[in-house]
Length: 630
Image (cartoon, rainbow, N blue to C red; front, top):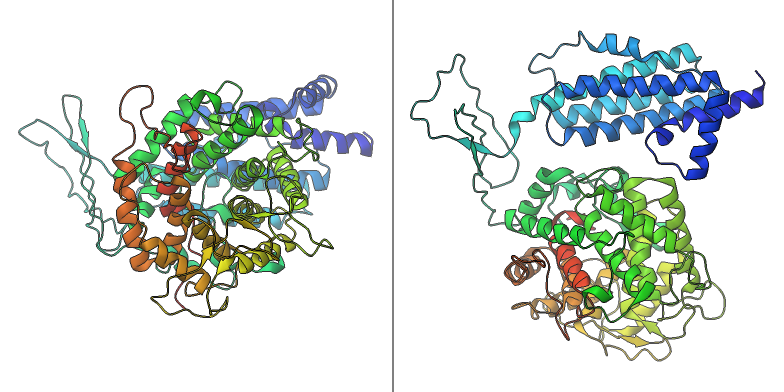
């Protein structure tokens, strides 16, 4: 067999997982199928992989495993499998380990109580496996085969961990039996130290002769809310912590806290339990999580067959790609914010279809760049943010490629004065001449998400926007970067203008909140900076009393007040929650949605109002804190 043939076979076998899971394009799939017909070695490799998957499914299907284990195990195995594929490509091997031998090794594995260590043990074992593979890069294939066997044993250990956690769900089974069955062994008290200042929860299981009724213990929300300076994420932040990651040379901070299959910088407590714990810690709870879930259900019901959300059907002013792409971006962000990705989650198919639509629509409208959707930076910024977060969470090559194209288009569309390094913000159209603070906010958020996702973002994008914010924000006699008096109220932002003619401070509360948030994301501004503290003090005096209120303002105010923390966040959170929870539609075809509110900034579309409300209620876990007490 020639070297070129071996190389081709190695590439084919490295892509077998995508081939068997239907993740290839039609052309790629046809090419692999033709090769398998001609190459006995690759055909045998494909058959072995199929048998291995079948044996694993058969084994797992007979075990009582927690509901969320399958997604975690699949994600973990895919990550380890990808490491193995990288080694196979580097060695040029065309062999695979024998799945039957692996299964034999699985059978006698001990399942005694106490041997599994929960999610921490999962991380330890997976990390050890990844390190083992990294050290085997130049090893012969017999050693790689042994490593693959070891990975399968590790996976079984993870199953044991999942089984041991199966009885730790936050439910209580009650019964109408008068006498409880005798207990042969002394029950061990299950202590759950989940939240600070919150009652411990116990799980009690009773045997019944009739269908059990599932109820939930009430969760106490602590009087003291965990804020940006006190969260578990902040405690973990350090010189290299996510809250202190500097984006490029601009000093932009990275703190996006969404989770799912991607992990990495987007990692957060995954699953409904992790979301609820973080929500309770930040001042939310079951009611806010229920509202998020019902809102996502409405979005899922109203997604079009093509993967998009039709703006016109839901009352939008903008029709065609301009409206549909923007609404798809809004909806996709809402799903991603709750941890649903192209790989994992109840709504992974909805996410896949939405991403597929955005990729297919990219560059179709002759917008001047194949990474744009329309000649409108507002729509492009929202879609770029959604694709970037999907790329960071799912780590799927096609999504990453499309997101990078979108980021490049946003970079090209920024206002430039003189040379390329002399930047400001964005106008409605690419290369326009007047800064628009509303459009700037979406594009800065998109660039932040892209940087965290590992995409290339030119640092001058951030410094240019900071130039505009410094010009357009009315700080009085104070200077950016210095500490402002605690009671200072100011920092209103201009809506539109240029650095030469900024119309200083002539903007709404929505763009004022957005400017303060952008300062935090770009970096160089602390929580007591006049450009942050002043807007937060103004927001504290402009709390939502009831819905409808300007959800565009509400979205940015929620994000910046969460970062500010303390009494500012408590005041905003206590006003925002009832305003949203009490007005979510209940019953009928619009159940779970929020009505568009004429004149409130969310009157474009029911999709827009619903997505912005959901994103506001996801703040407890969607964004990690940017700052902490020093």
